[in-house]
Length: 155
Image (cartoon, rainbow, N blue to C red):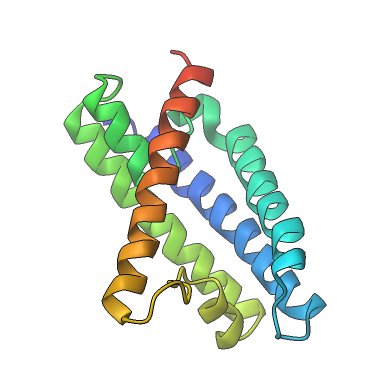
C-alpha cells in the first residue's frame, strides 16, 4: 500500500469537500440563508468544480485523483487498483471528507454544515419516495460521472 497515495487521497478529498462546502457557505451568505435555485446553480457547480480542480492539481498525479468512493469502486472493478489499495483509498477519502466538514464547522456555523448535507427534495409526498428519488438521482449522475472520468483519465 502506497502511503503517499493514501495521503494524496485524504488531502485531495479534504480539498474537494472543503472548497465545495465553502460554496454552500457562500450560497447561504449571498441568499441570507433563504437559498435560491438560481444562485445555487451559479455558485455550487463552480465551487465543487474548482475544488476538484485544486484537488487534482494537489494530489492527482500521486494517487490517480479518485477523491470519491464511487470512483475508487469503479477503478477496482476495472482493475486499475488492487482491493487493498481501494480499501485504503476509501478510508482516506472518508477521513478527508470528515476533516473538511470539521474545518468548515470550525470556521463557520453548524447551520452551514447542515446546509451542505445532501437531502432529498420535495418531489414526492412520502418520505420514502423523497429518499428514493434522491438516491436514484445520485445513482444516475454517478453512472454518468464515473465513465466520463475514466474516459478522460486513461492510465
